Length: 399
Image (cartoon, rainbow, N blue to C red; front, side):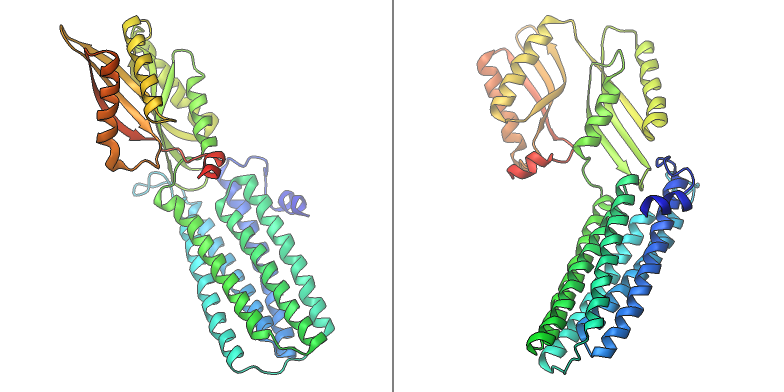
């Protein structure tokens, strides 16, 4: 069903790197969401009024908010597809995130309204009318929402859309909410116990939590989130795959909306190679990055002494002491300035992000003492910094 809809309504659906194709995916997702949620709202509202169930009607209004969210998403996707102009040279892609943020507020507002209604039902309970057809209809709506979750997750993964993945998670939350509603009706029908208000309260909490989660997922790219380890490795390996590049560091990626990224990176080149030749390589990498990765890449060129045995000796010394002092650390931009009695070792020390910045001077001083203990003629000039890469899944698990 998903592939049929995609092939029918999205031209060139395999070219997911194309902004027009991405927009078509977003429009398809929005219209499917509007249609399904309006249908479920009418169905559940009719059932809720028939059986006098606030939990069913709460669930119906949740679906109506989802339909409104799909409309906002549609507007956001269309605005995000607008091309770059003089005032917005990187396009309008972030409008998709703004639209998702508005959606999250709508969801939270509906959840708050349902919360107040449910508390009222708990304080002043009313009789319900159990109806087996109503339960079956609500159970069918669970199946619809499960499919919608699968649909949005499939599309979201296909075009790497955090907004669609958030929508999929929201649909899964609706599955839990409707299942709880069915449970309330079943309890009343079997035992005659009215837990409608309590279940409605649970539904409202699920809705509010879903809204908060969507807001968190949307705010991350708007505020400027860390680069995923996968993207970091992809870009770094791409740059380092070219002859004449011996290493890279300080990769920063700026997100201007799905499929719209700008990045900067420092590429290390041998200092004994003609600068024009290295510059030609850098230019080629920047052009290829736009063609092959779809990223506007700016590369800063760092000359590195690769055939100087003295530099290699001191670098190895510093790297060993740095890792001993701070496990997981690394160094770059290493160079030496030799004098008659003292040798300055100048470099950047990259430490894990969880280390507080207030410790930077202390770390630099301690590393300087450790290196000097190995070679008293050395004097370290250290700049402490942190990577812009997010922690891997394994590192998060350790935390």
